[in-house]
Length: 366
Picture 1 (tube, helix red, strand yellow):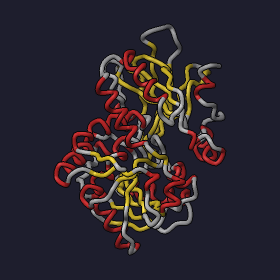
Picture 2 (spheres, rainbow, N blue to C red):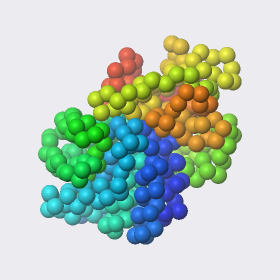
Picture 3 (tube, rainbow, N blue to C red):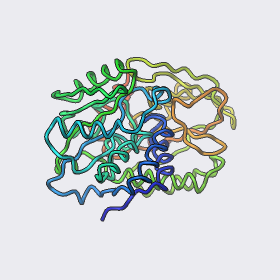
Picture 4 (cartoon, rainbow, N blue to C red):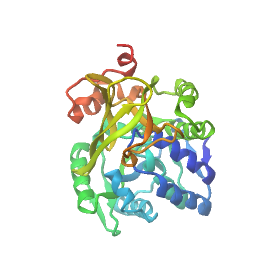
């Protein structure tokens, strides 16, 4: 039986999704406002359990593609995701039965709710990453062999481009180039899936988990040292791996620039609680690698997330600034990303780091 997402739920969903986004996914504030108003106007959206998907379903992923920092400048109007849904159906001649989020990360976790509410479509309780990652071939959709196209992208002018490509690597190159040409951010409808493909390719339960995570962060808001226990207990009941505190300190340097359609850079933290070497966080939209001196504390595809130390509010990578006091946590990724075929596209070497993936539970005990 499906549950429902109401406008009162949106703030908690956004908070939880920012935590899971590992710094990426896009700042959710404007999207939160737009989604809240859409649900007030059109009513709640059904959150549909993946295992109850009917056999004749057509599931389509909807979201933003581009550098997250651009979303702070090139603000969405609110009708972009409606446009990509309508144009996808006109382009393919097929009727979408369910929508799904690219990633349970930041703005992209809630953007589909605007189209779902306006068009009366249910949203699948799941996504294609169980976190945020920067490239199309890194989605579980692509890893499980779902073609990215037919796909439609709409830019800030309302213009549309249609894609028909054979694989996610080529699609990533084309959609990234289009996003860069049109100011750095576009909205897309892509990765159409039948029921069998959706059941195999979507990570289940992540939207409802993000909502519960957001509630936990709100109910236990305050110093990050006090939120560790409730967060650890919540993650122990989930499909994610172990939860670990990695570092507490002050941001003493942040370098960030937009390169090739991505936000790329590094944040450096100095400990405020003990005599430790500085922590370095490598960024490509998301926090991908956490190192202390020569020691790797955590790496993609495990989750590395940053929160404000005084409030426990999760922080997007584009919101990191000098002088912030923060705590950094690491969480093991779900099993979907620990398979050999997944690690071919999401292991640290895929991001240019000269190291193999070692699960966080092994790193913290070494």
